[in-house]
Image 1 (cartoon, rainbow, N blue to C red):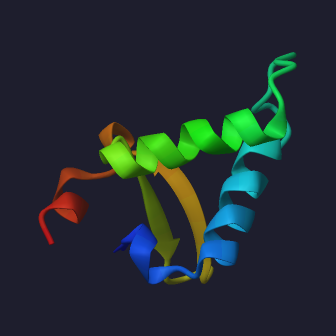
Image 2: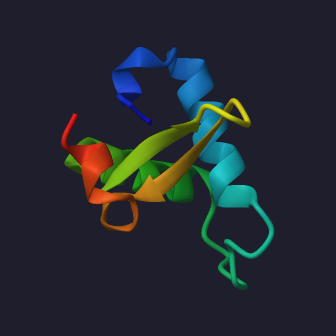
Length: 76
């Protein structure tokens, strides 16, 4: 299930993005400041290039590139 970013409180969205950009394996030696990485993800969300996915079974949210989610999820 996709969750529109507007449905999340600003602080919750920020924490979700920060969690995403600081996960093991996401920096690949990148020394870019956290604020810059968060801003990049926000821009991707604003442009519709990234989406917030909610997994009902695990009750977890995660970020994904729109191109990586099943097409039927985008039709709703």
